[in-house]
Length: 362
Image (tube, rainbow, N blue to C red; front, side):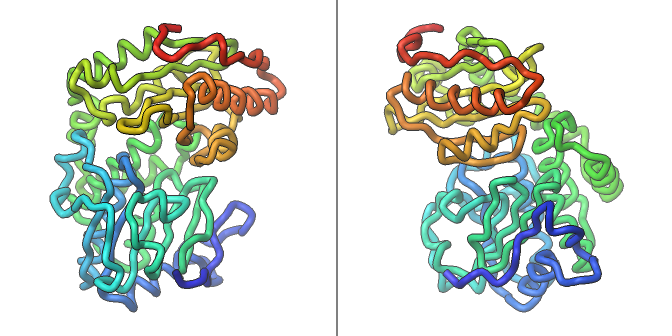
């Protein structure tokens, strides 16, 4: 991998947005998009709306600039995003041949390993991210934690490059914006989020279709799993958590995708300020994918980072090794530390792992 040659855009860097009077990471990204011809666009494994939407938008922008752009994800596109324009351009693979490309654009990842795709580390990497835990692992890095979604950064690049935003591109970016702001309810939602939504709808984004496909077209298996997860919810003061086992998924012929969004129901509970949802990983017994959410100033990205993960202040995640009781104790312990850092919140008592045994309702 080539050494980094651009700084990341972080809050204390001042105004380094595209179009600023001094060189910015955004400008550096655009220069490399202009000077190279063969691109690969990727995002993180287990893609969400921002991953899919921003990859599709980046691919269309590059093609409009006269470039070739292959789009690759390690895991399948979730069902709710399979109606997006030109989604069929996204291929699924876990390895890549670096010699086929001049550069790879990695979107919304705090490290190349987050893509789940081998071979990227040997490529010229353009790293575009908006996570608070983002880092300078790329050849060129643009990290803006104030961006509501990575697709907003792609939109900024398109504006600077003079690339017209088509209706299809606008729909993909609107999907990313809507999902990454929690339908405009997350704390990171800003006036700029609504300004961008307005612009995208003006440029042809089908907001009603996106809402229907993403929010109101879920499979029955997801509802069954949600019922199981909610029946297991444990609340201790401002902290709530629950879990799903692989046996639950097998019972309903469900997939990991069918557990998406479960944690959002926990954080919606009155009085709950931080929430965790653990899902046993298929084929990896005693390992648990964990989603974290918070309200107010509780920073779950710190808890996730302490457990080897990352994300945003109010939405983050990590993977935990078991046994189950140990995984639960670890993540709840880190969340308790973060809750304690917020002075106006009561601190939940530390939880003994002996209170929970995997396989029992709690």
